[in-house]
Length: 264
Image 1: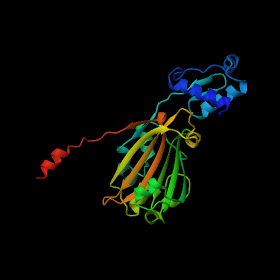
Image 2: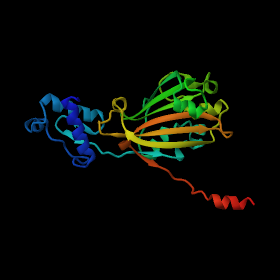
Image 3: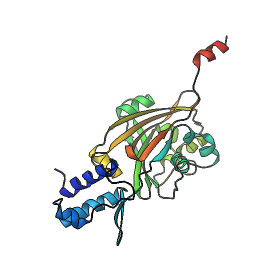
Image 4: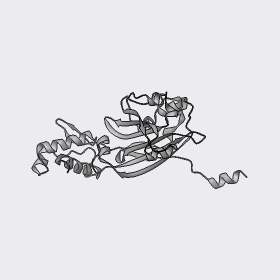
């Protein structure tokens, strides 16, 4: 059973998301919630601190606890992968989202760990490998103003990335231009990719990692990246806090019938 402060924090978070407390509104004083029977002073204080850690409110002496604006980040669909960004201008994909959203970014917004792991079934299937085959997992956690927005783990075949910056375990992006730039320099220029999205409930581990209220769903992203000859050079799994992104796709509408007719 969740502790009382967590139950109260989740209830307040739900009220904020439902608009009962709008951006700029003050939450009740701690003493008012204590008098209303919502918990002890320490319980309410812990609930408010959790909401602040999750980026939902700000607290300051003399001003109380105020609901923050809940403007989600724009998560670009196609433009974020423009080769001119990572090949020519040393920009990684999540920074393209920040720029499009009019938001700032700084060193330390992305941390990472790198490890050689046994490929789980979905990763093995994407790379055409046996389940359990060794693959490199490059796991990133991306934050905005200290609050996690999403995690992304990319899986690579060892023969594609050994000896490159991708397997360098240092924190932060894999150097200028990120992983796509590294693959390009290793002779694996990305040509096309497939993205699949799944909405689902968050797991306890994801709630802790992304600092989510218990009611917050996530959007799971599967990204498969190919070279021009169809070689899979990256399979990535992203976990995104659902309320922290809008997904933006702007693309030319295909006309396959016209294309077929024009080749005759």
